[in-house]
View 1 (cartoon, rainbow, N blue to C red):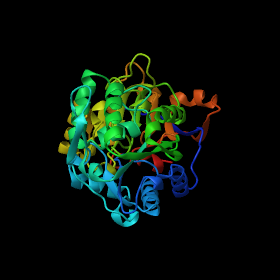
View 2 (tube, rainbow, N blue to C red):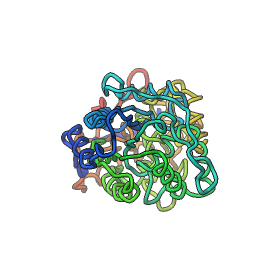
View 3 (cartoon, rainbow, N blue to C red):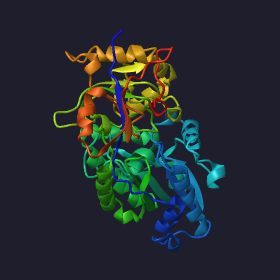
View 4 (cartoon, one colour):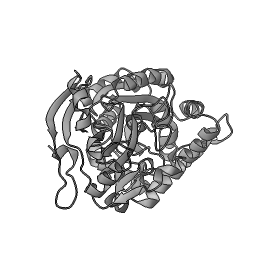
Length: 423
């Protein structure tokens, strides 16, 4: 059998700003907007809640609902996730409930529907869709995380602006906007649609979230509607500054324990693995440069949506069995990235997968290969590195070596434990 490298465990050092009391910060931020001057007693306020695995999201959504009640409004929660959840109301409600966003916890209804209202036509000539329940509410608060997009680059990427068109546009809006992006650009379409939504859909506030490199809440900021576009640019710069990265610029193989929609819109964050522009290799000026990626599993929170599986070369067969093909394919087709749902070469065991991946890295002996092993692309602060990196790691002040190089054998079934349990 092919001999695999020894591994050593490292912890990366990243800046770690963190909101200490989530609910208090949400209340403080929203209070600064004095929404009680706009929301009259008994009026309904729709609150968007997306499909990403945002830290503390249930607490944040509940705190927004609590603030709405404190000023006399009646909060509703709206699943705002485009075509995720199999493009069904039941599937989208289940995703929210999986994050702890329930009617019981938040104390208000979840209005789940795939129906939209065409509110106007964009300047480019297509219809602007908006969730029917959100449109029928007296007011809307848009909540979302600001971060680099996995497929587009610009001064506006993923955040409140995108939530207003892709999330609250439901599958009908997501489909037409992704088609329009192919003819124009992400920046043009997100601005064009979001400006129409702000003008016609009673948005009274945005609640923007930025996370640190440890998947923790670093910033919560309430933003007035007329300030969302400019403020999001600034928050995106902060999100990019705080974003984690792999500790080395190249690898023969990256092993990832799990992918999923709760991890990233593309299943695994292309900004982390260096595949933002091309499915199976880094662009010329893009890093890291990863030769092969091998995926071990799918998160339960993804509800079978294995979007992103097509970005990798190898995976475990169990991932393919866990994949809900309809949900995955719908998301990939509507999102305009059909290759994201293609099936890589799959193997029943980690042993077969890893040894095969190491056999196609060129002239490097597999035992000397540069291999990185992470839990997922949200959690890269602590990881396993093959011995080929050890001397370089010793010279790095930002890396703490937690375990010396040692073999990590496969168990009797030919598999590894997850990274968190491989110590």
